[in-house]
Length: 128
Ligand SMILES: [Zn+2]
Image (cartoon, rainbow, N blue to C red; front, side, top):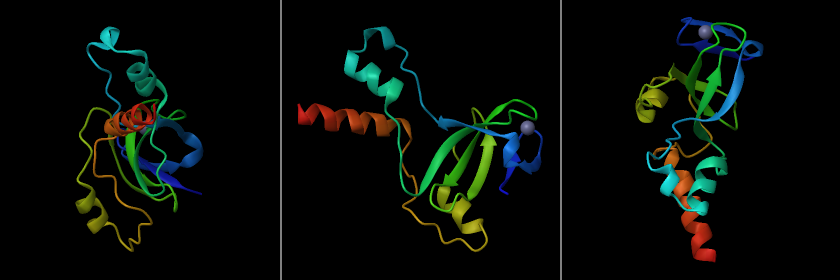
């Protein structure tokens, strides 16, 4: 069973107490009403799905009920760090360097997650 550290409860709890809540660090544009359909579609639906390290939102649904973020390897399912919602993503190099027995399987996420939707949108526009 996977143990997940809740940064609010400050303890590890079994995974059955948590619910995955999608990609972390998505930023809603302040001028969203002025966006075109493709930009809004990208914001609303396009998400990263990497093989490797990703920043995700999780909710301690059967505990404190609060949302937080986690750095997880999608291949090994290992969670390297958790941090409170609203906090900046920790430096991945430092997180991986401090993790014991690290053999991460993918390229670390080095760009803000929101830019993935922008990249996907640019790719779609160039196809059109
Ligand atoms: Zn909690």
